[in-house]
Picture 1 (cartoon, rainbow, N blue to C red):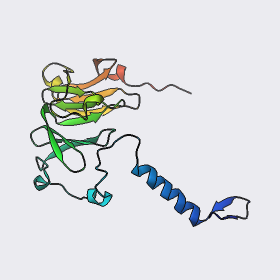
Picture 2: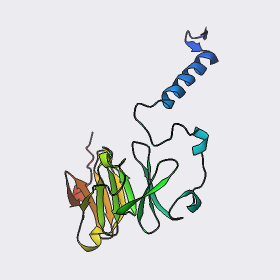
Picture 3: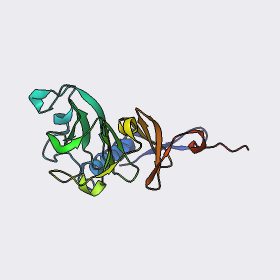
Picture 4: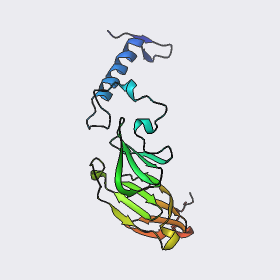
Length: 189
């Protein structure tokens, strides 16, 4: 049953019954997503509410360098001595042969992984596979230019790569140094 009341200015306001029904619909939609997520549908939501994960829960190291979440709901962590791990809400899985210190998710969903030895891109289609994923390796610059210390995607999709040798910009499948000429310019009104 829906009931409404008219306020002094002629605006119709819904009663709590309408709000409850709308909330129930939203919860129902959230319970049945169109795409599978990393959560186990047989596990109650309260089972995921945790404040700490440790080695007793399967976390391979107490040191976590970086965390990102992919569009399918998995958490990706760089842990300990630069290991890449995937967390599905219940289990941690170490990804073999991928060394990670810093992480970023591209606008199209690819996972970018930075380490002391360079940068690797894991395509979004490979993020839900087990075992060693296919990667593409990049070296922004020589020597310390391949020691990656931070990653950031701009709103326009440009990847900014901070290294021990300076700032690099990755755009259109190539790197350029991140000097003043490559920074976005503002236009006068």
